Image (cartoon, rainbow, N blue to C red):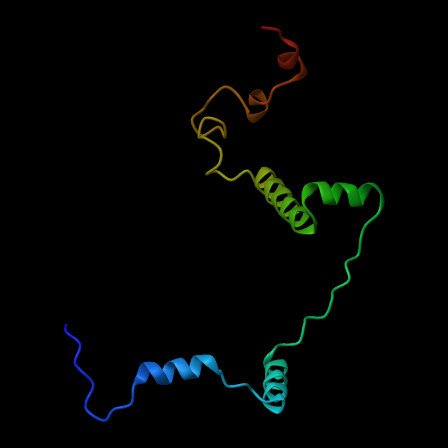
Length: 122
């Protein structure tokens, strides 16, 4: 698009912008103080520092190596679930040949390795 010429009698905008650039308006000290007070009022207060209890000794080192108390809670939950599933031995977990429904000639104990099975080389 072609630029249109300014209407007759219009002020020269480039000269006005140049004058504004040469002498920028200065903010008063009262305005800057009000602006800083409003900014401080709008900022949230910093959260209170939480003190962390540090375990000393072997238990503290073990908990830290595992990943902290959330990891210990997850391991405890998994251990309880495994114990529950292992003690309950639901029919859906065991194949039909192990629980005796198919008349197999072996029991669950036959599937667990003994010391003799671990000592065999080969």
